Length: 97
Image (tube, rainbow, N blue to C red; front, side, top):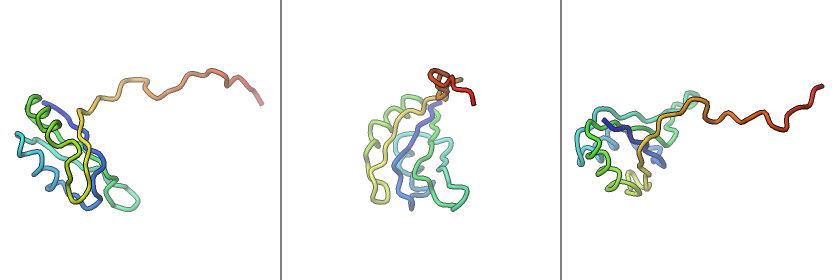
């Protein structure tokens, strides 16, 4: 199983467009394009899950910077969020009011 991050998507690209591109390289188990909750428009990125990691790697190699609906999408392995990532230390913030 492999989860692939797909970025720089055209706002017109549909899940079917993305699925068709990736299915040329193996079995796609799911496709999700992230939508803006306020506008209902695509946020220009999403995730593709493929059943086989080697097929996923082949899809990434073949599809990174390929055009879908007129924009060169980026494709790379999605990294799971690590616990505590993005939380800066409390350095330098010692002021009290």
